[in-house]
Image 1 (cartoon, helix red, strand yellow):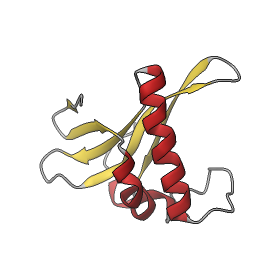
Image 2: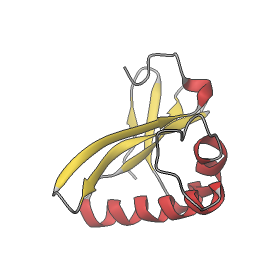
Image 3: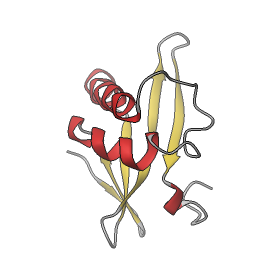
Length: 108
């Protein structure tokens, strides 16, 4: 598994076992997800679906979503990465940070 480290952060690829983490950290928080399309799925169902998608994306494209961790403490802070958009052939940059990570200059 490829891991990227900066002075403050550690990035590691999303794995299927991250679904509960994604649900509690991001998808269960209405403020974090307010700009995402509405979903009839629960936070846990969304997280499982996205974790599977992220893993498949890494396999298919060789790049994808990362879990963002505080390098000093190991605390998870969110997700970020690259997503291939099949309909256009383009790649988007995306990120979602837990509220506790807001205001720290991580996504500026």
